[in-house]
Image (tube, rainbow over all chains, first blue to last red; front, side, top):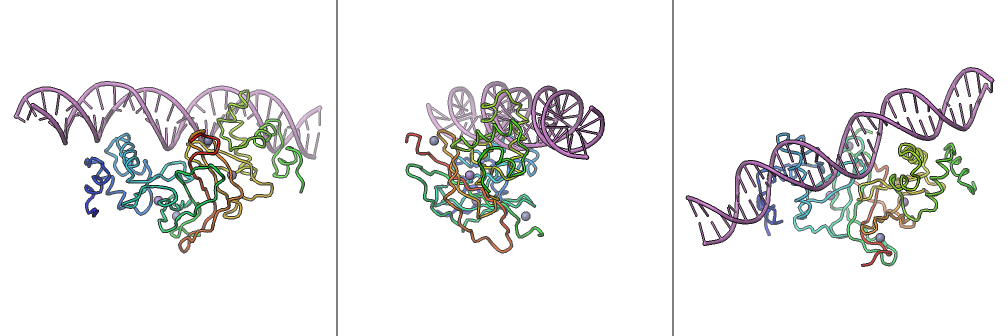
Length: 139
Length: 139
DNA sequence: TGATATTTGCACTATTGTTGCATGGATCTG
DNA sequence: CAGATCCATGCAACAATAGTGCAAATATCA
Ligand SMILES: [Mn+2]
Ligand SMILES: [Mn+2]
Ligand SMILES: [Zn+2]
Ligand SMILES: [Zn+2]
């Protein structure tokens, strides 16, 4: 499947491509780091908070984005790879939260090793975050 | 250093052993899983929320407990090993959050591998949580 | 004992995340 | 195209968690 436009990308995940959803997706594509709901509020100040919240919720439910719980207290979101299903451990990767600039980065090439869980512990999802200082911030 | 009593354990971390702090520590020792502030509120309903909040904060600042951000929305706390300094990656371990019973487990024997971070990314702390179903919950 | 420092309790505040409901626009069906 | 239906949006309110300011109580020290 070849996805060129934002509209096609939404349709591929069975998301109705409304004006707002297209604009949020464009913002996500352009962002280098993961974004939060309050980031969206700042970017789209004319739109209602609830609409943006539900936009992210819809994206999440349809596997367009994944959720990141860094130590910042606010949930962040980042685009999934085109054919990602967010299954553990295949599609789970490391995240890095910079406590200086408060940006959260995806490291998709750093996969998560399989942990040797005790008998009858069934993994479903994973959240792996390293906190520290990123390369853009002075030591 | 040999730490037998709760009082000694607090003093070893330079925490003044008040009555409340001793009771909370005992509860932490007895707990099999990580606890939240609201767990403490239920357990010690006579005490003020703020006191319990600040007790955990003090424990955290003195390295007696470590903080776990599972996906439950509430921060959890668990006792550190006696000589733990919470440094990455030495003292960081995997946590498991059961979405059925909402308990959070420490797996201290499952260490965290060193990730090959890009140049000039300086790790300081880590939060590694797998969500799923624990061995006590029916499939 | 009196002075000083720490701990606790109460009342508020802040932030994030979430839901109910009414409205408006899009989409479907005949 | 008209009417019915469905979905997205906006507004308001709510809930849960986290955190602060300040004064009273308690412990510690000289
Ligand atoms: Mn990511
Ligand atoms: Mn732990
Ligand atoms: Zn940074
Ligand atoms: Zn369980």
